[in-house]
Image 1: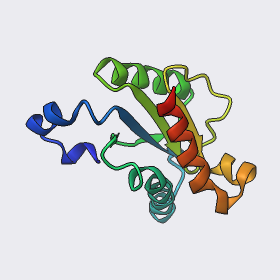
Image 2 (image 1 turned 30 degrees about the horizontal axis):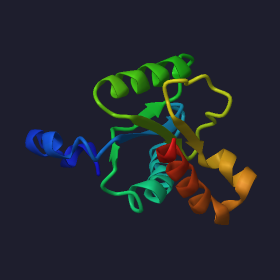
Image 3 (image 1 turned 90 degrees about the horizontal axis):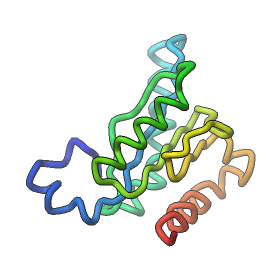
Length: 140
């Protein structure tokens, strides 16, 4: 479910079930042309679909964090902590193009980078791997 689909009344009603917040990260540098930025957003959308579609009803997708910067790990960590303090039990950060592996984001429960996963599990194994990681997160 997207944040923009929520009303105050429905949030009060569904907050118990929507325990996982998804933060998309586009990883734009500002050097991309409009066409390249659009392509990056489309890749991110396709990656997010691997979580949003099968786990609809339990995951709330927040607005994307678009631009890379030198304070990225601190920013994403602070954002994750704030989202948890607002009532989410889990925070997942997903990026199609960004390289988030090795970053210190302890407040996030799961960080997934498609570019890294492509090398680790292959393109055909990404959806299954991502689904397994989400289910493992909820079992903890």
